Image 1: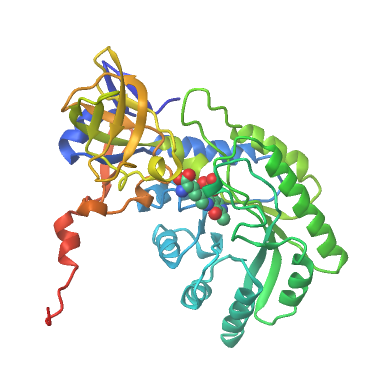
Image 2 (image 1 turned 135 degrees about the vertical axis):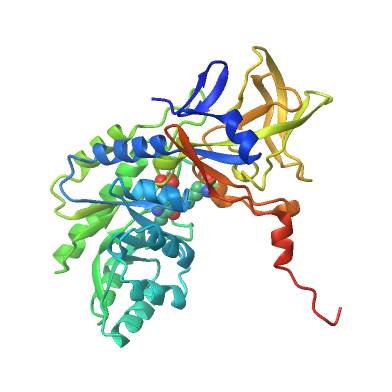
Length: 418
Ligand code: LLP
């Protein structure tokens, strides 16, 4: 079911018209569908129902809103976190510490300590020294930190270079060749309880082949570790499944992914962990915006909307495509560039786009903005921090306030000597 759909000539989210949210909350604003989050969380979970022992850790970087975390956690998900801030959110959302996986290439000593004190379920180590420090912090406190070693399987995920993580030149994981010796040294440390290995090769993957290749490399490593006498209880397979952003995109579904995982991991005899982000959140949200002007252009008109690259950075950062649709279509089409008010040429959401015709004052949405949208927002150009709304049936709530430019200004100081 599509949770954003046209009814009586206007776009609704579930049973709430987007025109109402725009009137009552203002624009720009992210709008999420709780039902869409639930449906995707269930689809991914159900896809893995044939795998004997699974732990799902929602990659909260995709959409860490507290209310969203509640919805996803209620579907049986723990959390994959990459900072102390994300850990605090996961705990605040009521996710049990034991269900939290702490990833990230630059965890500070303070963050490792917070994780230890909170009793989180797993640290994904990115380098040997991190393991040594974690072991020491844990041992001093009479604890044993459960950890896995993230390896870099050196496969090309076939995705955008900026969201590719599993090639040997990327900053993530340790070389799979060095992993056995490193694993042996880490396993010998008091304070560390090595549980297995982790990988994550990239995001927005359409093709299962690189994932399968990476999983097979990991299995060879697991066999090698076991042959060397190590217990391997867990393998964390990361996230990465892509979603549809535009017509013609043809990502593999969670069901197809689950079937591959089931086939490839048969007999591994481990708990398999997953860190899905985008596949849960991507299509559960839109960025609702109002057209300020339609500015005549030399080639195409510029539709200047009140959302900008600071609210949704993906087009500027990765040339990402987001569909643009009118909330109340006029029944005509136009070819236009869609841009925000920020003073950068890169603040464009779409170029030469064939889209619903709009005029100044009309509402529009940028679709598939539920993942890596609000979470990557900034206040560049002294713009407000974009608010978020969660729709659930015929109810909605503002689940993150708009932080006004004045509020941000109030946190700044001019030293007395100036
Ligand atoms: N696990 C790890 C260790 C990760 O680094 C990531 C994403 C995930 C899981 C979740 O991946 P997903 O299932 O969402 O593909 N800002 C970019 C995406 C960055 C992804 C970073 N890591 C974008 O907007 O496309």
